[in-house]
Image (tube, rainbow, N blue to C red; front, side, top):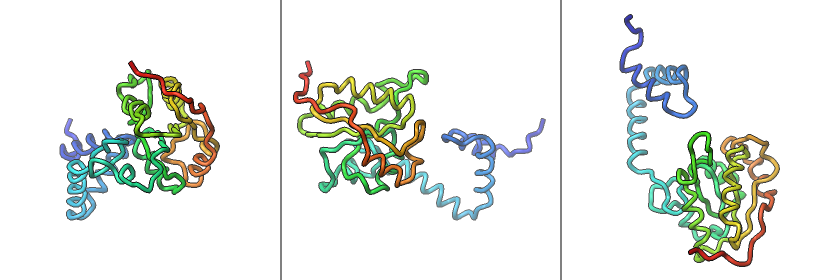
Length: 213
């Protein structure tokens, strides 16, 4: 049977469907919208995508998005470098930054533990987090566990707490304002601010860091 959809249109639809949250219908609508735009706008979009791939990288320290080796937050001497906020992905970092209520630094895990999906500790930046916290030069006093309030987020929090049970810092969890199952990136700024200000302690700081053999 002859297809009513040209092959080049079908190719773009297939590529767009690879993006998270984009189904067949959405991909088709986006493709038709692009076809209706002036050629210079489509060219500008193509150039922006190419530039994105060639210039954006992950920060060597926190694994947030950056154009340099270290992101602007990690380089900023005005931030509180003793306060570390752990988030799932860069979108969560951006959402928290928009509140203006947090002046510490971050660690982006790149996801959460999900055994059912085959996501284990080695698939995330957990080893790097543990190394940062255990490094005596960093002097962290508080670790804010800002994963989403989902079963996977809570599993990740439990893993971190167990791995750092003897660490000399306080661990806190985002508190009221975020309903169970909500995603941080979709929360409004006031809700996130309340969650940061009302965070609860999940483990008090210990007095001695355990030795590592």
